[in-house]
Length: 156
Length: 156
DNA sequence: CTACTCCTTAAAGTTCACTTTAAATTTATA
DNA sequence: TATAAATTTAAAGTGAACTTTAAGGAGTAG
Image (cartoon, rainbow over all chains, first blue to last red; front, side, top):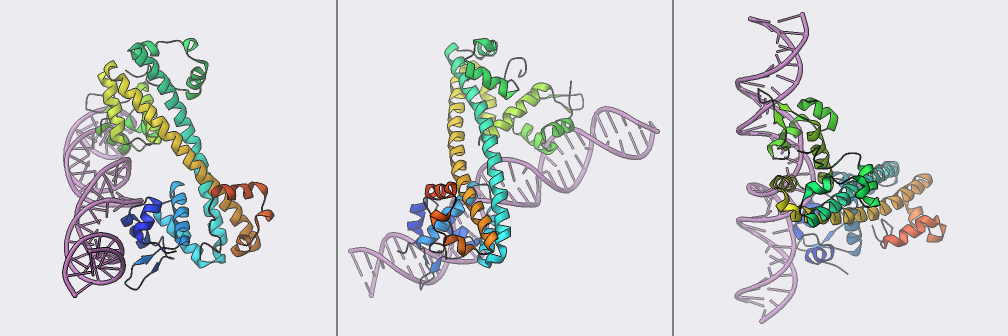
């Protein structure tokens, strides 16, 4: 089964010019061409695109993904470098998840803060609330955040 | 206690030109100036910077953060819009964490794959391994991933 | 007072990842 | 076979978030 660039665009959600751009940058070296130079994508190319998508989501830049593909093409002599690459990237994603969880804590606190403020029609009243008046989860969150967000005292 | 821009740069890890850029974009409307127009940061400004950092980590763009700050300045009539903003952002961070966890699954699988390949000096041998020879966790991961990554069949 | 460091602004430059445009070619449809 | 739709390339343009440069002003140590 062969796919045109439009088919692949629909399947992946990536615009056709983006696929051409990836190809130009060397991310799709396995895509075959028909007589007139038209790209003929195979299932294997779709798998590569999924891997590329994952590596991009992990924070790798286009040039780093190209580097990985170049190493892959070079064969088993580059196994160690590719291994190192994945370990580095795994660590980086773990850190990013940790950071986002902290960010989520702040957002959860803010959502409660504004829910309550909207209810009272007034932000100050919530800022003046003692921690004991807050739901236990929120109190816990606020302690965890270590710094007061937009409390009257700290944010004029 | 007042801080110069260099103090704040050291405290936050943000380069001084970045802080000036944020100020220019309207993200630091509360920072006072001394006689010669020199910025004098207070503790409250550091708190604002932490909130900005958090909002940036959540995926908000500079102009969106400015929008939030503008709403904050407008006062209680904008409580509802600010509330909506935090809910939208919370959902977005939850989605991002989910995506990153899937990405982490692929990377974990790849790390095992390359650990084993480096050990054997050969990637094909690992690709040809039956799932029953894999550690249970890896087998589970591979099933979860739904598509084979760089197996001989699928990636030429 | 001088020298030095740090601060200021405006404006131009950079990097990244596309996105758009234009012109030509190929393929599919009537 | 004519025409319309889709494909190709190279090159220019875009937007976001800085970063660098240049030129000048402020604060401090000797």
